[in-house]
Image 1: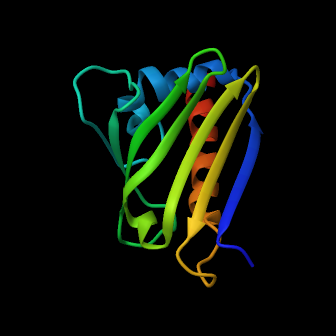
Image 2: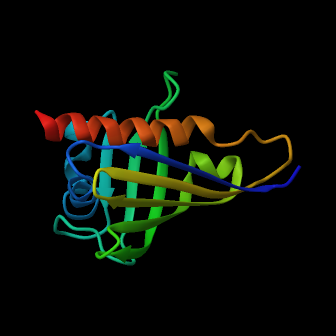
Length: 147
């Protein structure tokens, strides 16, 4: 059993993938207002993220009483492909994984999320809970946009 892995999931978004990308890229500060993210912080003024931005999210993906934190640096933004690469640099996920990179890519009526990770040990579970949580966040954003 290997320590490196990759999870990929694509979900249909009837509002159009470009609108999901716009929220994540141009208005990430609004994500807590329309999803189950509890808090969002960015290391600079303004609404849009940019390459090198450091962002932090507070969330609860498992229903426990303790909120979790993830801190990420934006490694890449591709406006044509409508993709963003988020490298996890701090927070609860790094207790289980040596590295974790999240890629969101949006096209037409689809959003694809990828987790590229390396587990600390072979006993570490695959990151299915946070991956499912991210897919649910995309659906929550879609629901907001379709209102």
